[in-house]
Image (cartoon, rainbow, N blue to C red; front, side):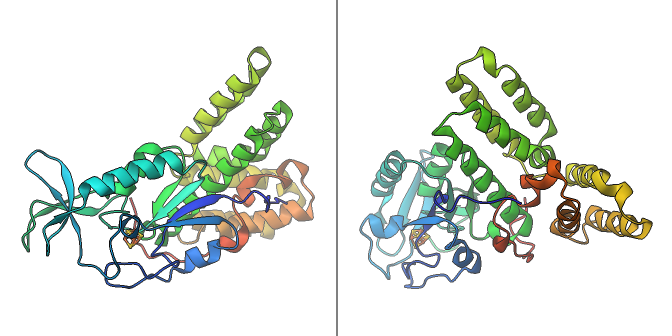
Length: 325
Ligand code: SF4
């Protein structure tokens, strides 16, 4: 089954207060289990924008405030200090100098790191009204790195969001690893091995990707890779679909359905139905089907990333129910 290239691990920028330092305004840090698990599989680059612009730890809280000209500023209510210029400059320079990054995990709701649901106040006084928006650095990262997976620790508590994040991270990293060589044969293998996964995300884009490969002989390798990447990013920009996952599971069952007993078939169909009713996660019917793929040595399915889009040790079926769209 699938092997991951341990020499080319994804590089993830992470908010430093998530497991790397006690650098929050009150001197606290987080202990996030998911990030702990990820440490063996990715290369983390921790950043703390507030410390990096020169603020001490601990420090008085800072907040985002929208001024009369509709400009969002980063202010410290206790002192009246304005850190906007420093933070906007830091955000620009960070994005320009980070280089090749495969993903981001940022602290939720932080006025600096947050990517959504950050309070933007109408004023400095206690009880001032607020609306939701992005933090200064988080917002700039979202604009600059639109093609890579970006999530916050709060949303990643949700199983489905975490699964989509990891799937996108590892699939795009697999593609990036190919880009160095630009071999057409390897791109075709990549496409074949990701077919079922892409079908579960976006069947329309899967067919577009096939067409891009179909016309590859008439185009330069650079054009083919450029078009393929653009379409691949779009295919993975949304969540995998329940209905499409069910279609893929049924399609896989079709490969060995006649070789198993009626009771076995009934059991698998019941699992697919339980997944359809959202009573169990996809990994349950998927792993049962995977065991038959191994048992019957089904070559067409053996290397499908659908069965292991990211290292299986990262699967954790817990769901806070928070962070849903
Ligand atoms: S949220 Fe960002 S700026 Fe705030 S402590 Fe964490 S890493 Fe530093």
